[in-house]
Image (cartoon, rainbow, N blue to C red; front, side, top):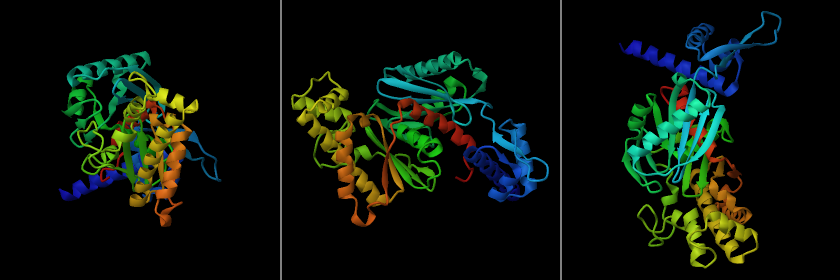
Length: 388
């Protein structure tokens, strides 16, 4: 029995390796798959035939002959089905439909009021189903739904454990949404979906060790090590709730002195209000506009926030020594005052022996790109190695 199990596991592993090789490298001849993956020609022929029977891969194009018969190229079939990705925020929802290569078919954003989960789930399902109809797609070809959520997510159980931003605690998101949508549903922290976007399709493609740090309504961290997202026991990445000032400002999470209490969008708006620069009804955009118009006080608030943020990035470089750190999120609209402060702190506070090893990369992806990463949660389940 164990031998049968081992053979099944090995076949699944080889199947995953072939799918991922085609996903990353595009159309490839069988001979190249044999040479680069290290499987026998017979094994590759057997597994690719099975995948073709399932319509996961297709014979796409004819390559150039080197003297013999022209090779047939194999490729992922992008139209074997489609997936839906959703990013849920405090007051809006971003949704993306992608094919099996994570190529975006349609995206949109809608206003959305977060309230009781049981009511919101029905609303989300209706938005998704209506969007599928608008896109002219067959509901029967939907392979699954991925959802990115702010807060601590237990990926194994599919539970949102706690989100100070949307106010949910211990919500069985996967189970309830799967029942409503009648397809598999997978959830993750929204910053991890942003990280998955970068890892699979963006600036992190092909990298083994990097991080993403997002700033805006909150501050989040995504960690990639050995080419995979690191989640710890489920809550890894809550850098916004690391304490930078013991006994300091009250944070939404209930603690005092958290990073988010000082440099998140609400924190900066509140600081500008306390200084008499803006009203309570104004937004972070108002503060940024003031700074761009020459307000010294607004410039100081933003550049100081940038310095604190850059110090955080330097700490990450000192602890983890990643290849690079990708910075994204709505907070980038704070502009050069923020970025200059960030770069200055990163240079000053990275350990001298490590300076220059980790670079900072800015990526101004919008919310629908995060939703694309959420769609990737479904594709990840399909492509993932069984021993990952």
